[in-house]
Image (cartoon, rainbow, N blue to C red; front, side, top):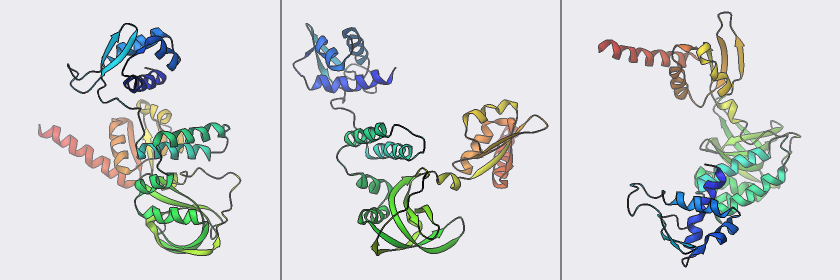
Length: 309
């Protein structure tokens, strides 16, 4: 089913519900800008849609009175589909990432999509959506961005296991992978940095304006996440050659025995363990040692079950 037809079907029922006296098929076709026979086909399909159980009283029921059509039972589809807050946020973040990506030409189309998304999601302000999704800790930093002031923060870096103090010029609060980040120009580093909100130990608003210096080609807001993802190294046999085509790889090199040595980023090592096991004998873990041992233990436990049987 095409996306345009799906969208039409989802809107057709509330359209008819709001016209309880019935609407001629020709008028429906004109309003949806499709041929009348297409509307007839859509109405026939709606007759087969409804609530789980799909028996009498569960399916959408329509009545045809002459040339008019009206809904007798809408099966809960009595209003247009609206996005939940987390769905709207996910789409909004993706569009903003695209907007900040160098080389993307049609900025007007992205801006238009963001406006339509805001309308479809309701009237809740964008910062409220961020706060609901990221938790109460993000509220303070959303207010800091809105204040237009610089700030002095004490930040814990998990990768270096160090705490440092720095002055930053806030740009925005973003949400990615379930965490809120303060995106800001770091005066110490001299570049745009992302600070995970739950790792900011202290924050003091300064009595001076925030003047974030923009890079000529700034990275996408969530590009920094790639460096935080664990990297694995695998040796892949001929039966796993599709991995290179279907998964982003940092590097791919050929080995003398015909296998490929691949390095790639993964969401976490538990996902990587299941991924490697799914490749069977076509994959060997080179690094990290933790993943290699985890795969070995899981495979050994599975083999022991077969031996016991």
